[in-house]
Image 1 (cartoon, rainbow, N blue to C red):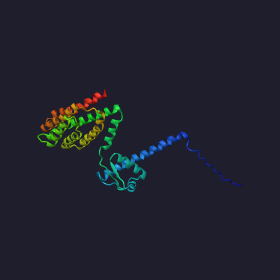
Image 2: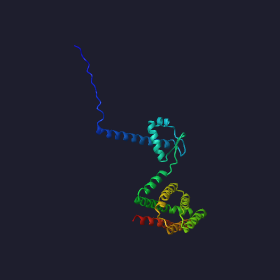
Image 3: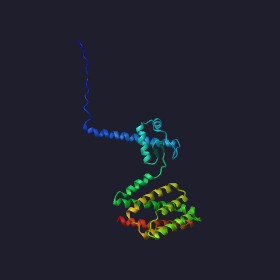
Image 4: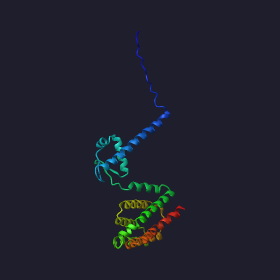
Length: 259
């Protein structure tokens, strides 16, 4: 008797139509998870190797080998970290540890503030509240640091703000320089960066709203002088009062605008 082999033929029927979106979604999730893991691995690499802003990162091939991941995962992770200013990619030169500024925060907040006619005012109102809270929170330290000192540079900025306000003009650059100078003397770099970021959002949004007025500008300019005098006298209560008066015209305009 001749035994004939049995041949089993598998016929591919293709992926059922209703499963295709599920498979595609699962693939996207897997890719996202790999990118997340690689992103964290690169951050950990920077930390464990003690790298500082400006230091070079290994090339893609070496990163792949060191982290045990694919080149596509490394590239996607580097792009993500570049968007966060944790990594800087220089065409033809490679990747470097970024400055880790707060630029992404500024861009996101400013865009949110300009996204809608109602949202812009509400977001800016919240930004002003954050700035005021930070200034008040550092009041004691600022007064302790500046007590008994003379600050001719800051005084000149106050004079410049008052002069421009009396002429009906804004004084954004002098205003920012004043706050940055105060915070530099206070010695809290994180708060200094936060305030700078909030200020940049402020400056991108306020001119587009048209809510500043000559009277409010003059009150704000003079409040800077009150802040400086109180700080140099070491008077925390007077400093905090001046901070509140500094923000009052803008806060009032925003509150009225929301209603």
